[in-house]
Amino acid sequence: MENKQIIREIKVWDPLVRIFHWSLVLAFATSYLSGDEWDDWGSVHEISGYIVLGLIVFRIIWGFVGSKYARFSDFIYSPKVVFAYLKSLATTHPKHYLGHNPAGGWMVILLLASILATSITGLKLLAVEHNEGPLAQVTIQLPSLIAEAEARRKPGGDMEEEGEEEGDEFWGEIHEFFANFTLYLVLIHIAGVLVSSYLHKENLARAMVTGNKPIQDETDV
Image 1 (cartoon, one colour):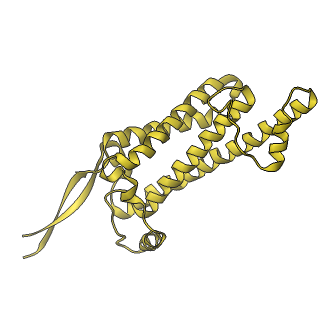
Image 2: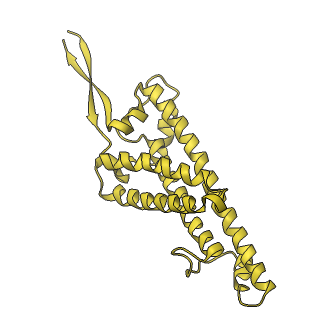
Image 3: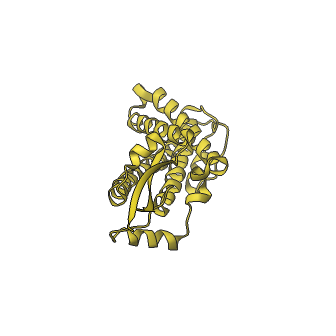
């Protein structure tokens, strides 16, 4: 008698997770590339930014009420488990997970948080620069130096203009930081997908298209 491995596929990613994933890729890329050309592409940047924010809000909700592998409870592991998984990548047989692996799960959380911060600071920048958007009439607590600058935004000529310029610069820098930080995380995420695909001998990008991932069963023959 000997064991024979049979490979079959199991549905892991539901349709909404897959639609969310690729829609976010397209919307974030569009928003990022149009960010430095406000005069010509401002409306594209703004619209794609709203789409990104809507997608993030959906994913957060779906992380609590969605299918098994979409829920945060399925892929948020303790730091100890994450480090153990990362160490296992140096071996020839790292532990396999059907859903997000421990490192990939935390990357999802970091990406959601960073993109959410990018979206919120973008809305505040839109409010400060153009007095538009849902945050146009909302006051967000700032560090004392910037709070003083915003306090000077009252009718009065130079003081008003100075406050507006400092507020624009502050929110612009924060928005740009989170946008670039998100891109940095995306690059790490892509590298992680490639490494995991190679080590586990599965195409993770394809799985996010079809929703299926391979598993191995053993049978006696």
